[in-house]
Amino acid sequence: MIYDVVVVGAGFSAIAMACNLIDALPAGASIAIVGDNPGFGRGTAYRTELHLHRLNVPAARMSLFPDRPDDFVEWLERKGKRVSGADFASRGDYGLYLRDTLAAHLRRRQCRVDFVKAKATGCVERYSGSFGFQLENGDEIAGRHVVLCLGLGNAPIPAPLEGLSVSARARVTRNPWRLSWLRRVKPQERICILGSGLTMIDQVLSLRAHGHRGPIHVLSRRGLAPLPHLRHHATPVAIDIDALPQRLSALTHTLRKAAKSGDDWRQVMDALRPQTQKLWQALPPEERARFLRHALPWWNIHRHRIAPDVFDRFQALRDAGTVSFHAGFLKAVGEADGGLTIDYRPRGRHEMMRLNVDRLVNCTGMERAGIEHSPLLQEMAGRGLIQPDPLGLGLTVDAASRVIDAAGKVQPAIYGVGALTAGRFWEITAVPDIRGQAQSVARAIAGTAPH
Image 1 (cartoon, rainbow, N blue to C red):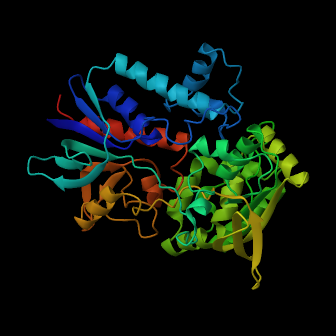
Image 2 (cartoon, one colour):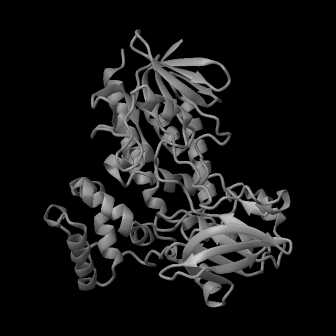
Image 3 (tube, rainbow, N blue to C red):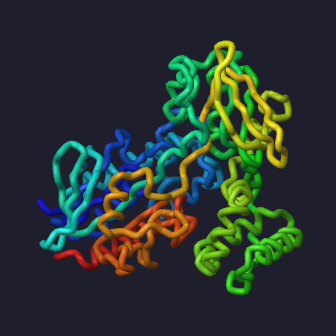
């Protein structure tokens, strides 16, 4: 059959699209959700079962629906969770909320919803006004509208590992979200974590929760760690986005000046938060590229903050010397004395340094939103159906999230949602951003769907 909508993906963006499509489409419409993720909708972040893995946004801003802002907080209350709207709920609880919300929509749906547990590998435009997808299991599926909700792939370790023995490779954890690796860690093992962002924080606390008491070395290019939210709400400062300069150096100077004039720099970041997409789109292409080259790490630690109590727990480990930071560039991974050697060049220096550890854990996070991780997107690009963003930030889309093809023409029936649209919207990986985009796309499709 030909579905009215085919949603490709199985993470948060896909579950947001599914719920909004069920709400928006007329009775009798048909939806197919195509993805091979066993924990559909919960993605990597929300499948964790460790309560210490917390959301980085207060519960009051985590509703799946922009027009029902209290939905998640009300779910927590129904489940007897003692979490207020200002608190940072566990990510596991948020995953259960997504599961329950989707199930409730499916129970009252008026349209057909089919889940196809397979990976889409190819796409062709058909003369019947639809798009056909080849699936990894040999089947095919077609839809009149397509919503691409493919997320990001795991960033690889930036050093060759082929020369390591089998036993040494077993000491390298490429994907830390497969928590089975924690069971293999001995209490006094020396750990090197590659990357110093939010994933690193989670894995350090996971190690401690599983009884690890050995030293932890954190190696990243700049040695920066996420900063905490304020413990109490502070009113954002007034910032006129339209009056901000469009050169990155002048913009940074203006924002630093604004931060010094207030009580806390977070008031400036919180003022930018609802206007970040507008600010990004006002920057010329060369300034966007300069931002990605020079300012992105500092933006990340100030913008993507962690709960205050999580920060305190992590900072105590740093103060005690259990966790030590190294700013530098990984050059080689070797083996010696039954363990691993980590050779890196410290930032700003020429000589090499070495860490002797028992285990290497890749916490470099997700790769930038390109298309290299997806055979489907590469195949669609080869056919000219999509156009990669010139800065490598996913796909080129218009203001309505419609995909623009290789000829520069808007594809009115193909949409991108979530991280794939970062080139246009930049801040489009967090729940508050994606939920609004999903609702807009669902309503746009419903406006063209047959009744």
